[in-house]
Amino acid sequence: MEQPYIRLQNVAKVYETRNGAVEACAEVNLDIRESEFVAIVGPSGCGKTTILKMLAGLVPYSRGTITVGGRAVDRPQTDVGIVFQDAIMLDWRTVLGNVMLQIDIRRMDRAKHQSVALGLLEQTGLAGFEHKKPYELSGGMRQRVSICRALVHDPPLLLMDEPFGALDALTREQISMDIQRIWMDRRKTALHITHSIPEAVLLADRVVVMSPRPGRIVEIIDIDLPRPRRLDKLPQKFNDYAGRIRDIFKSKGVLAMD
Ligand SMILES: Nc1ncnc2c1ncn2[C@@H]1O[C@H](COP(=O)(O)OP(=O)(O)OP(=O)(O)O)[C@@H](O)[C@H]1O
Ligand SMILES: [Mg+2]
Image 1 (cartoon, protein in one colour):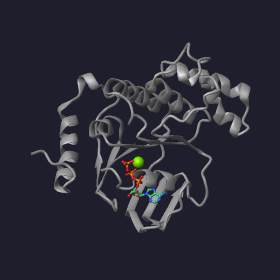
Image 2 (image 1 turned 120 degrees about the vertical axis):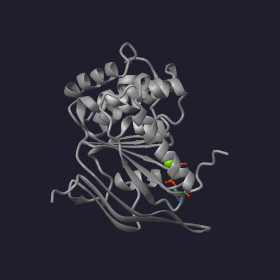
Image 3 (image 1 turned 135 degrees about the vertical axis):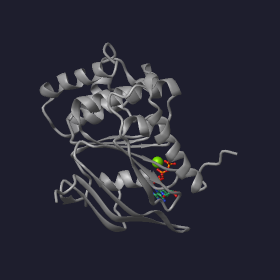
Image 4 (image 1 turned 90 degrees about the vertical axis):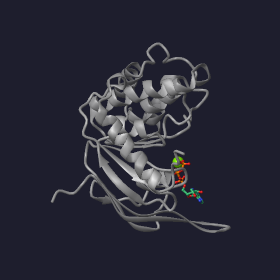
């Protein structure tokens, strides 16, 4: 059988702290195919960020194995683009300069990638803002810059940790549509962490539903909806999927409706 692009097998993470051990997640088994868009939803503290960091090689795992492209992850991965919850930016660099940071750090060809950077900025509605400084941008615009920066070196894998967490509802919707369009253009393998059930259903091929800490995968739901998915034309099936995920959280005591 063909090896999946990403494989997490029986992965667990225990953080050793001054107050004892914290088991963040346990028995995580997940295969992700190349070009697949997978979303993870789960309650706060169930180990979502931990999973993303282990996958990126930024945090060692305590048990199990993680492979990307058939190779065990045992150090920080360079072939990934990561969007963190807070848009981290260098204040003294322009918007374009912040996107190009990725290229400078990796000592890649500046001339070749500048046009890629400009293209991404245009695709995310930032044309005309290339030479602004981060403080001149709104929170949503900063987050768009982070998305461009995560993609400019053309990584095969895109990891997003609640990239819209700090944004207002309207901006979230707009950037979700941007992400969908960019993903449809490039078909990079994507792992998207979110608190939002509709956002997960909107974007993903599969939604991974996690239990409270120590986070375990409760269910993986295939989202069989054609793309592009439009927020103004959501089919009944969309609500059915969201309802199923809500029911899982209710059964785990994560959501109480009454
Ligand atoms: N560096 C660390 N040292 C000790 N404990 C940690 C560390 N990082 C995370 N934890 C603990 O591990 C658990 C999972 O944290 P994690 O950040 O992965 O959760 P999360 O699902 O991303 O939560 P949220 O939705 O709030 O971002 C939490 O109990 C947290 O306190
Ligand atoms: Mg987190």
